[in-house]
Image 1 (cartoon, one colour):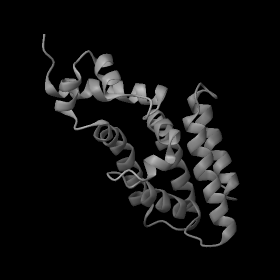
Image 2 (cartoon, one colour):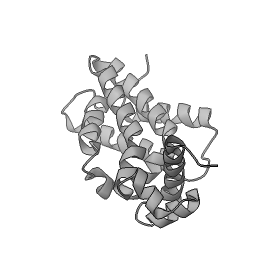
Image 3 (tube, one colour):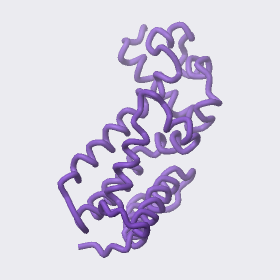
Length: 182
């Protein structure tokens, strides 16, 4: 039985994400994805113009979720801004673990990807984590939280059960930012 176009696209994306997270973006070919899905490379190319387009579609929901988080905290200030940003960022990284792992694999290449706003969104996140402060201590702590949460979420294997991991990531991030939860 033939698969619908939307079902085929979904299978391609699911397979690509799994293969990218295991073998890396560079280490996975279009043929690898097509073989995994059980279709021809030509069929895959009918649905996606190339590997970069697959990557864009895979990472767009993560990008959109981060943009939504930044919109949600845009009007906040002080401690409320920091706390809401930390919780939102931790939740986002746990929700999109495979995508984070993919970003982490080659952050330099991913940050320069033409269809993604990785650096612009990272700058907005950094600013919110720093409580919009330009002071060096706040910025350094924000960079540390940005990286540590990112790396912890991208870790292979189970560090701790999800509820424990989430609580500890939030607690540690807030402590690093010298913030006491309200």
